[in-house]
Image 1: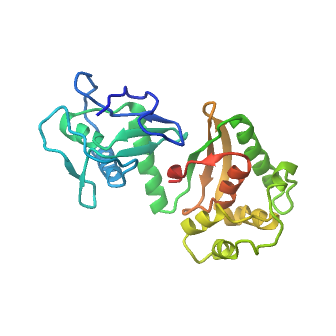
Image 2: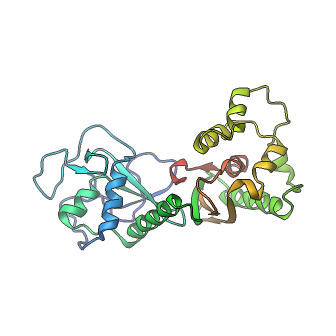
Length: 276
């Protein structure tokens, strides 16, 4: 396996979002050892059962002679390690990428991941608890812009604030109005009907919302405080390509359709992996 220092920038595979390395260990490179709380270990094992960036073949462990693929129970049965990654997001939207072998390094070799990664896993545990119990929580997710991320974040903030100042008849900026379609839905009626059908799963409605040609009235209605299930906190630029949008989710699942379309209209790309 290729060695990358903890918290260095991820470059192993092409990625639409900026990520940071954790747990890319190799013989000849010492690593921090220690004890990790059982709840955090269990959460990492659950992540192993939902792999990201799967590749062919398996990597061996360079610190022991256990035959590859090494198998661990991820909560849904034994999972073979060494051919995938896990991705973990922290409250401000940073993404950490670790080989799934990190679970073995932790349990068999006492590898202690950096504090930032552990705190991100802890935060994910809290978010999942709040979602299961219908409690409000603050949620951040990343958006990407190849150029002008400050402008993209400012545009999103401008539209959300305009809507909040007058939800029934917001004075939306011209650049945003020009992105909205008229009320003729004959172009893709099947997509529009799926989006309008509030009896289907929120995830399916959100997928449909990525392609439906939004009209002004429908967008305003979907953003209505009593319907959307979240409150705007703010947009914050992280680096030259990335910004984090933060909302306070009042009730799960939160319908983010109108906000996600706004991101696209403003020139940003949502990292869908981070919509927890």
